[in-house]
Amino acid sequence: MMRRVASIAILCVTSLWVDAQDVHFSEFYATPLFTNPALAGHFEGTYRFSGIIRRQWASVSAEPYQTFGGGVDMNKPLNIKNSGIGLRLLHDHAGLSYWTNNGVDIPLSYKFRIGAAKNLTLGLGAQLGIFQISYDLSKLSFDDQFNGIKYDPEAPTSERISGQSVTKLNFGAGAYLEKRISERKRIGIGFSRFNLTQPNISVFASAESRLAARNNLHLFTSIPLGSSPFDLMPAAQYQTQGKQRELLVGSALRMHLLSSEDEQKSVQIGVWGRTKDAGYVSVGLQQNNLFLGASYDFNLSQLKTASERWGGWEFSIIYIISTVREKTNRVRQCPDFL
Image 1: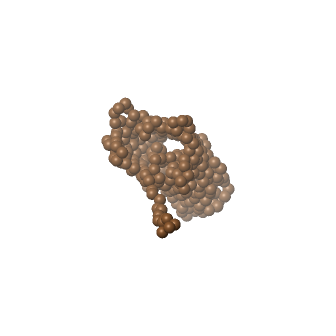
Image 2 (image 1 turned 30 degrees about the vertical axis):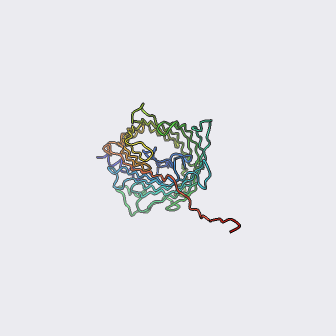
Image 3 (image 1 turned 90 degrees about the horizontal axis):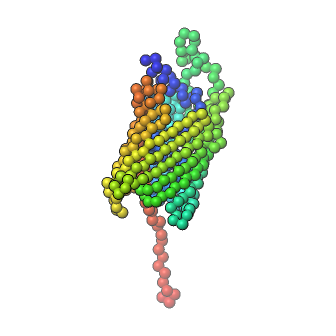
């Protein structure tokens, strides 16, 4: 019981006292705009709409952590070949402190095709964004509100707080190299770096809290298993931010149910692991230009006593509009002699 109470207390103040960290998703393979700005516009089609929602720690906190990420990106904007542009949205709500992070980013990308076969591409990307972190002061408590016998929520605190929100600009950049033999056979590796200027996000006037730069190294593959309708899709993501390290690794197995020019349908199931934190399973359904995904984490960290090994779930969606025909005004031209 005491372990559970202690764990709840830790979750309540995590967003205020530990080094700030970016949000992360288990379904990193379904969040291209959050993985690398070089992936903006990296798809076959004109527009891509994507969204993901994550909810975790419902078994520990009365106010679970909830994160929403979404956006839209475009391939070849203004008919500029090999380019991409996107709009990325983030809303993160963390625990009983009502610590909230809202952000908007605009990633830009450009691809260089390498080799005679043109099946090797190098994408470079950069993004500019703005985010706001806020909290509800009435939900927070401080150690000087303990009167020696018990905690007194009415007692004043000597903590100097500059405001209940902070707004900052943010920058990121990345590169992605992909070798694509066919739609079912490809391999890509990328590197991205976020929080380039490491903005100060502290709401305390007497303290500084820099948002550490985050490095993201990622690998995506698809390997057909002979002439069968199955593909193996190993993937991995390694991130560093300050003193924190995170490795996500695993694979999905995809089965093609229909594969023709007019109709494509497949299902997939995956098994993944996050080192020293969680293991999780994923499922996905692809039908033509629509992908639906879901996953669930099982907590394996030291918090497993309080969480009873339950972690969090995610749902993702991607929809691609293949082609958009531009409207043209047709003017009939007659010969001069008429």
